[in-house]
Image (cartoon, rainbow over all chains, first blue to last red; front, side):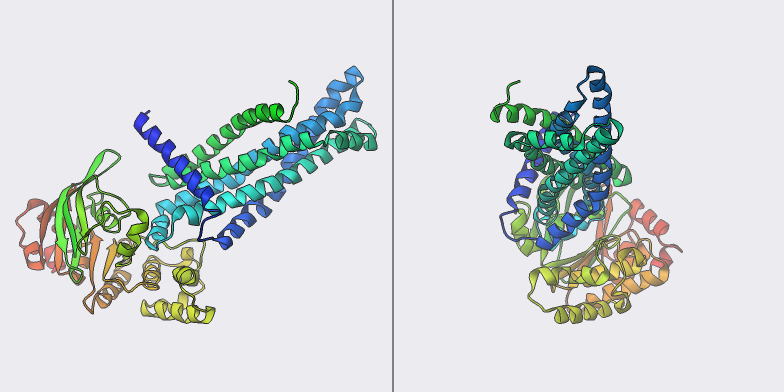
Length: 254
Length: 249
């Protein structure tokens, strides 16, 4: 690995991430582009987020039911499902789905624009490619990933409810009261901050790898794969770091 | 005037241009000839400031553009109209939206005015009927003509830059593009056309530059090109003219 090139890549990545973020508050604004991206990222991802989160919630509830019934602790299903989904699984699973659908799309779209000289055309016309292409995607991820996460969490809890009530024969009202009890400010905050961080990371990584595409269709395949792999790795790593920091800040004892 | 002073450029550690020097007036009709990967397109990208040379200097209208920042290059770029190979249309927008792209961003024209301007530009390049088509529905020749209309939408350039404008086109469409290039180069507006099709270059250009492995091997007019006693140039003209040098004439 060429160290100089790695350092230059990192510099370029940080520069793109910061100027992309600064573009949110600096003129000119490309609202129409941001709305188009939001439609693609949000409305377009709803079904897949719904399906994946529903089954994750059901699988989690099923596993807990199997383990806790042998200990006679099935009444804790709601509480454990709630904490796991709100704090951890909901944000992470939704972010991974978002990477697969929206992040890969960003990288391949921008990559093909680079290869087709469309990014050069944007520069020739006097637009800043970061403001025109990256900032709308950052805005869309910062708004849509948290929104999708809320929906994903709700669907996961519903999936957990279905298994707890119809398979594990627990009381539905007890399940929901357990969920209500764990929806404290600390728990909600512990889960609510993550999608903003994940959204920013996914959009920056995928835009950067897309815009650095070189070398035809093979290069496009490599940059799309790199974007997805790096985003998922960063989601998992940053999730751990965020969990560590948030547990400390929000006063949980470990 | 464009001046290249001992320009070096490398890509992925491969030297693409090795000390290229030449100058061209805005009114000149120049064809840059050479095989694939010889650095022809790199010259256009350097003129537009899309890439920077490793060494050497490039002057446009007396200004050194090699040290200019991205936001300072806009003024330089407005002096040219570049048509990229394959047209480089935005594939998520239809023909009308592609041509109207800059008009919407930079002017305060009403929708009716934009519509009229787009129609006028498209009919200038002979694709007035393609207004609602998407780029993937266009033929190669239409792609390039729409791209030309789009670049004409905002600026009145001093010079045109064409990157392989006829490559991949059938003879009829290639001829149509050549006529369009010739028409647009009237009124003292010249062009630099990068191509490996000698016969097309002969139809429109007055001056020819030949590149081989990043070095400028030849710079001269039509007659000098045909009489050039440089083996690489002679070989290229013979190979790239469908019926030999007589075809090129």
